[in-house]
Length: 287
Image (cartoon, rainbow, N blue to C red):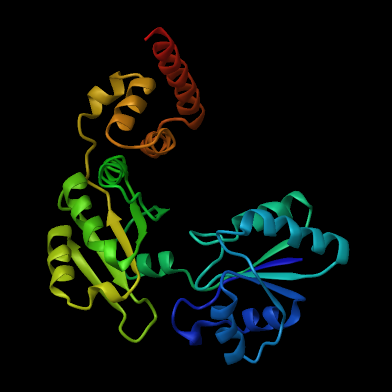
């Protein structure tokens, strides 16, 4: 059995009794950072053995853990440093390997920074989408955000404290003065949420001399945003749209993601990427 266990995102009081019971009862805990998780286990007097499972070893380690589960019949709990595993955190590969091996998988739900931030945003929306961490390169970031325009939803993004100001400015440049809710240190002592048009939130963020000391979750209300040159874009083939995005600084994979985010069919975008690669290869050979 594989248990996907959510852990507190700051306040230890959010650790559920079921999560404590699960971590005590399994044979092994696969943890993103064993040193960090050891503090959690010590607090709740949990003495289960641990092994590391992080972004740098997940590909190979997951197969080894699943092999032990199959051959030795051990039960495993998957945890990350904070929140729900496999959501912008390591763990998805282990879950996939367990699925393929026919291992039963159970969720032990609990804290999630994305859902917590949405719940205090004040936005009344019928649907939302979680996008995780956006691209870091400036042109790629703006193209990525521009691709969100026109969607009837709230968009949830994660960002590091040192790049949150850059992200707010990019939102303003790409989407205009859209409503934003920006949460920091959720569930912790100095939890804070800034709300309002992005110009106001950006000004408040820059005025805080301690702004770079917490992790941020941004919620954007995309309702009312309009895609620039929407009609013109619709008339352009997918290959041309991919090429245009690549010329703006995105990789081909990022450009494909941007088009599917706009609502284009995934299979059609993939086929267009193959045609674009072929056209570029033919042009290179002719040159």
